[in-house]
View (cartoon, rainbow, N blue to C red):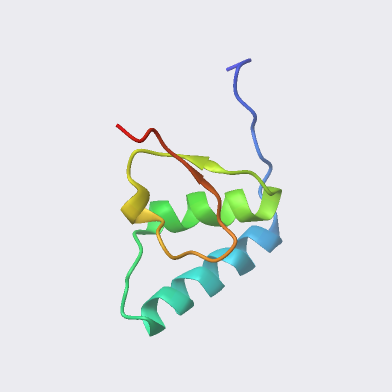
Length: 70
């Protein structure tokens, strides 16, 4: 676990999570609960997400995604 950063829970994350889920629902683009928590945490701490599933996070404002083009 020494290689990982543990991000403490914060109510700001809850706010990001709720706003993200509500915005996606209004757009008719549901987001899985786990993906919403990942995105909310990344937005809260200001870090990018490394993923091969860009579609899970596409269209989320201010969220930086890093992926391999292959």
